[in-house]
Length: 171
Image (cartoon, rainbow, N blue to C red; front, top):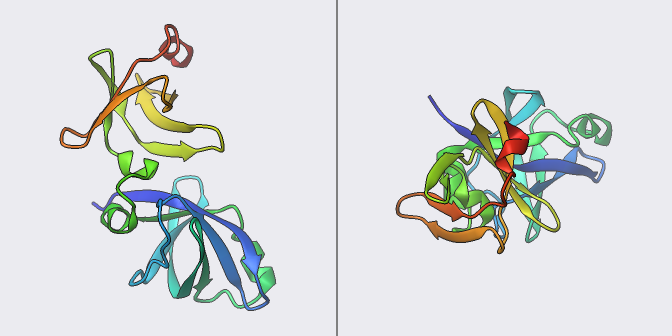
């Protein structure tokens, strides 16, 4: 079974022919050359495939995308704020190795204890959060210099020292 990863979301329309602006977290300029299909999360946990007609770079974190069947600004508006997903292998192909999204699938180790696999990386203006499943509950782990000890890419581990009581909030 193919695993999918979110690379960002559709943030705005562009022009009058149905183009959209995709804000991505891939850590480098890209036009996603060679990607013919994207998956849009139309409802929670429901991904539908859409064919890509054209893409072009806007800046470091954004690109213009034209999707087959979306031909007007009004049709494009229906897709604003929707998450875009790609197969895991495709995401790795286009991701900068130092981008936070490259930590997907790594395990967070807190004081020597594996507390869970990183399921999602949430980039906010002032911090990066890693979403994990902690004993059946969603937990958001801050990834910043005060808590981050080291990243072991070979073992796919992120070593952290979390503040006392932080994990208790999520249990």
